[in-house]
Image (cartoon, rainbow, N blue to C red; front, side, top):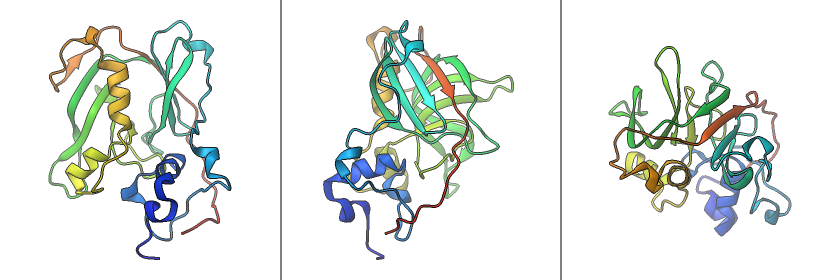
Length: 225
């Protein structure tokens, strides 16, 4: 139906369906294919990330991105603190794989390369966490962005932030999903990093960042609404 939405279909459980499908409300439309469990309770606390990650045990903070799952986890001494869906680089613009170290933050960052869809401004990258600068001087960040349910970026890692979407696109009316803010506060918002000016600032002893896994292969699903 033309007026269907995640909220109308799933009530207060819409947040879990959105996370499970790695998609924001702005990118949901009638007729699109989504995954819905037989038992909604199965996805309330869903995460594909391991609860314990041995490689992270020696680190106070460790960020693990599984590109195949399009999901990111925040670890403290190897234990999963929280996790969230992500949108990584699409084919031809893959997010660099390997081990990195977070070295900068910028709460009010904007892309220097890419514009918004209407071309009126540079693409906003709120709550940006820099983890790599390539030999070509291109920087890679974790930041707020749209989540269309698939790899979609030019290499950065995008997280839910409906406040940014409301500011730029005027939707949704009631911002709820704010994952970019949560990871930013945990990773680079501590007192040890000083007062956050909202501008580009270097971070000392930032979390280790690991990017692993190939791009996902999508198969058609019969579920539609």
